[in-house]
Length: 510
Ligand code: AMP
Ligand code: MG
Image 1 (cartoon, helix red, strand yellow):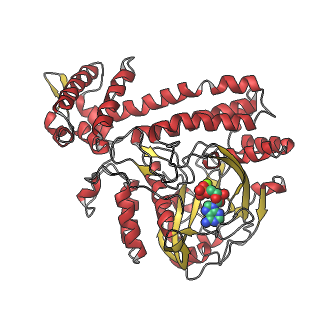
Image 2 (cartoon, helix red, strand yellow):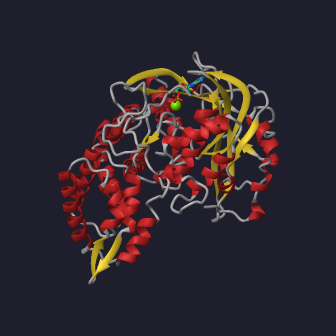
């Protein structure tokens, strides 16, 4: 994934950060320094992210990272700032949001293979109170920081766009949540920290000139390909919409539930952003909800595409000062189609279908219904389906023995018949493919992971890390960066869903 040769690596102590966002109108941010934390200690550094940023992995010394992430020593010209934004939370507009506990440290110019440079944001999360903290303490806890640190990798390596993190540190400050918890910080990295809520802030506070300034900044920095369109802002909105559709299709295909799809948590790059009470659902359940504050199930698993559509309409509303309303309405109508195409693509990949057949939607609908009715531990099932690909007399056949563990999860005998009938149709569908079984199998094994980041895994890692044992985090970092192969030393049971079908509810308070 790295674009760099060692010769152009920069080292952590000499990191040169730029401050482009700080040139925007002043009410979009407040400049401020982190509030230092006691006794910061490195839990894990992410070599792959360092490489992507062009940072020499050998320069990631634990004491240097700890001092940076404890807010003691920042890169020399760093001019940190807290961003101001707003957003719709659970459908209700809240003007009073912003970085309440994180600071944009600055932007790092990363040389690309073609000689150009790409700017990457470095954001210190857990850095202390800001003018946007409201009643919050400005801190983050080890539990949620560890989850955010790892989920960025889990998603990225499943080819689902996500922010990532360069490192995770713990400190000796105890933070009050549902209990006293160890404080922590991460350095979140992303090409953009601009949210839908930035535009909503400028729209609802009637700062429409500045809204145009921000839109121009976004065009220039993240959507240069839209500048030459007849209607550049509309082209950018379309690109945001397509990127968001692609991401949410990845969530649905792999069973990821974001948990808090508020518009302040929506990135204008369409990345999975602001990870909180997220989960990979263990067992397929269309209406799964994990966030215990989401009592009405607004952000239930199967509602996510519709919610993304709703969020895009909130963004569209905020863009009405610079884009024609009819154009926005027409573009919004395309979203279901963007989503459907992206979703079909992901699901075809998982099922090994290289050819596009009209009947695929129906085949997938029945597949999902089968998973849903039986609350199946579906991720290992895809793996089994990949392993079970074979041929008999030149015809595609799925080895039924490979699916036995799955058959055991089916509720009633009629469900087993349903599975058999689905498998027959799937085999018939495979006859339309030009790839042979071996090639199909190889392709499927490369997109269907052996491991996903289940809640049972993060729970275990949190409990170990809180005791000071950080090695399992490091081990899982490597697992998630190559989830398609078996890793020795990882307990086999962690590949499977827990026996209980009870959902583990997750707290928003992080
Ligand atoms: P989140 O639920 O993390 O997306 O946060 C929603 C809003 O609350 C954002 O404006 C955050 O910056 C802010 N916030 C969340 N937790 C804290 C905290 N512990 N201290 C200050 N602000 C916070
Ligand atoms: Mg947020």
